[in-house]
Length: 89
Image (tube, rainbow, N blue to C red; front, side, top):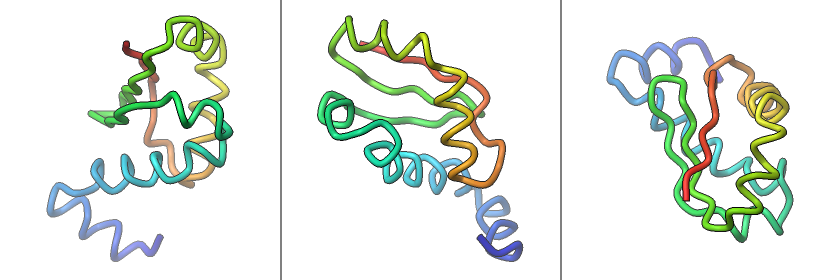
């Protein structure tokens, strides 16, 4: 993303909304269709990504790979936006 656009998003308080939408877009690509189908709401708030997963076993399985998920999403976003991931039911 261009530097000017980035500054505008930040100035108008739209940066997190933009990145939350980007995460939702990349989620299926990075996690696969099976996980994407079981994913509900995705929110980003002050570097904390909250992802609704209704399946307790899937939440547990994904929790083991939180660091890798953060790394892959931040890599896709080309910025260190996500600092923590929380899976909620």
